[in-house]
Amino acid sequence: HEARVSIAAEVANSYYDLRSCEQLLQITRSDATSRAETARLSILSAEAGFVAPATAARAKASAAEGSGRVTLQQAQCDLKIKALVALSAVPEPELQRRLIEAPVTLPATVDITISSVPAHVLAQRPDVYSAERELVAASFDVGGAQALRFPRLNLSGSVGTTRFMARGVASDLSTWSIGPLTLNTPLFEGGRSRANLQAARARYDEAVIQYQSTVRNAVREVEQALVNLQSTGARGEYVVQAVEGFRTSLGGTESLYQNGLASLYELEESRRTRLAAELAVVSLQQERVLAWIALYRAAGGGWDASQLSVPPVSAGSAPAVAPAPFWKKWWNNASQ
Image (cartoon, rainbow, N blue to C red):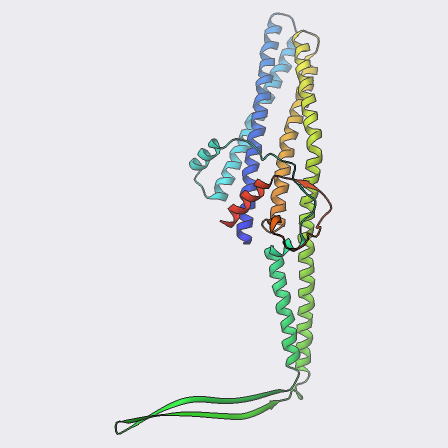
């Protein structure tokens, strides 16, 4: 189970990391195209004597910067494809074909709120389950060590069947025996049984501490994922508003520049601001998806809230928003 959950989470992280990279590549390509067009117009204006040669040189440098950013982003996407090939064991040509057929998007969110996670869900985590079994075993060891300190009465015996054959005549006889009766009293052992009991209790205390530490770590991971979901959900609206405003500002600045009412410096500054805002939108979307994957992994592989038999116990106070189909998809993949 742990292997399935880990593979599902790692593949999801790698896949959406690649999709985010491809979206960033589209943005940088669009920005490079805009810079190249500005450089072309600036060079024509400089040749006609309408702008200074320094302005044209600045535009050419800006276009070169945009092209370099595209090359760097493309290389990063190629590296992420290599990583996904190594993780999924799918041949690169086949993986490339599948990636082309699928849209370059990140999961869209819907208004489904998760304000808490049932505490008993953490019991399905392999590390919590293992620590619990270790605690149970240590408890039985204490009981066994305690029992060895008392006298033990042993009664042995046997029951069997014997077959005799003489002069062609066979006969079956049943035999049985009982005894001896032995009594073992641990009196002269130099405190060995007491030491064994103390050692068993010490191992039990260690198992208790280990179990508590494992559970606290599981709760911490779930709460961190919920906080990240809440944070990305709250920031999403503001980031979208910012990028829309910067796009409008860039359009106005381009119009002013084409009519000679704005400088190239003002245009480039507006373009850089717009580019940073668009990159922030994609990064926020990726961060939100990764937070969902982290919550899936922290909860031990997903759960079905409709089948809960006990009321949920809050594992964190931070609300979160995410699509239910995303959970079902990755849980089904992990189960397979």
